[in-house]
Amino acid sequence: MSDDGSRDTQRDKQRSQQNEASQAPLIEHLIELRSRLMRSVLVIVVIFLGLYAFANDIYIFVSQPLVDMLPEGSQMIATEVASPFLAPFKLTLVVAVFIAVPFVLHQAWAFIAPGLYDNEKSLAIPILASSVALFYAGAAFAYYVVFPLLFQFFTQTGPENVAVMTDINAYLNFVLKLFFAFGVAFEIPIATFLLIFSGATSVESLSQKRPYIFLGCFVIGMLLTPPDIISQSLLAMPMYLLYEIGLLFGKLMKRKQVSGKACGVGKQSI
Image (cartoon, rainbow, N blue to C red; front, side, top):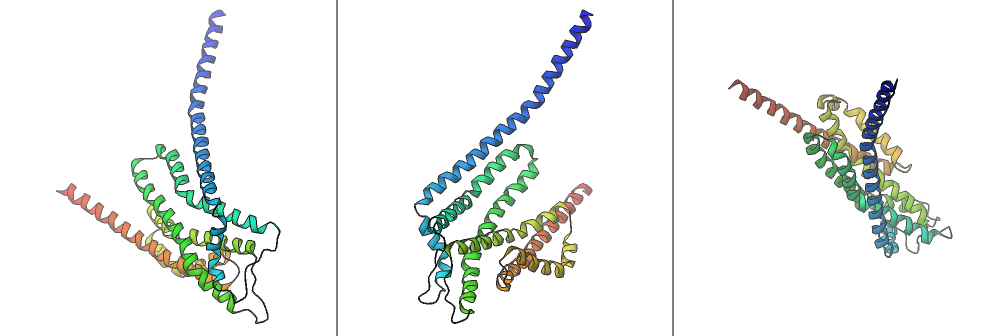
């Protein structure tokens, strides 16, 4: 009986040691994830504190496309007591997150990279860098191209007896939606390339679906932008153009793969 009891005790010890060994990597990963999240939050807070002194200047910069188009004598207004404080505060926080995106993505990459293969790492790095650059490009396109056209249309098509006085908080919500919509829309080349690269679809299949993609761009534009045809069109047309760019990169990638296979077959035959 004593031998059986000692054996059971040893088995229990072995099982507990195995459980502890299996839990240790998970705990280490959770600790690392928490550490990287805290670093990301800390960087955002530091950037926000550094920018807060310029909160009003940042809001003036973002609102300039509308102010330039306002009729003479018109100005932006605050319809709520706290809006003059909250609107610049909110915008500065968004800008801090916007600036910190590369660092946050770097932390995410450092967390997941050890579990990836070398070929996956070589593909992921340029995709991440391109995604960030395209998102910034989408926001810049919205500010420098879309906003002037959009606000000129809005301010010049209203009735003559209506004074244009836009609330600063309503304006901020409006432009943040557009910034986000155009930033996401500019990721279409990356999405198209990944679909082709992963084998989920083919260049030929996507080429045949051009009419549906064109219609889908307008549907997405309707969902992501304020309810006016100008905003929808200004988003849908670049989206379709970016889709064609992604399709072009997909074609080039497939040609490179085919030529690489042909070279490999040629070497084997030699």
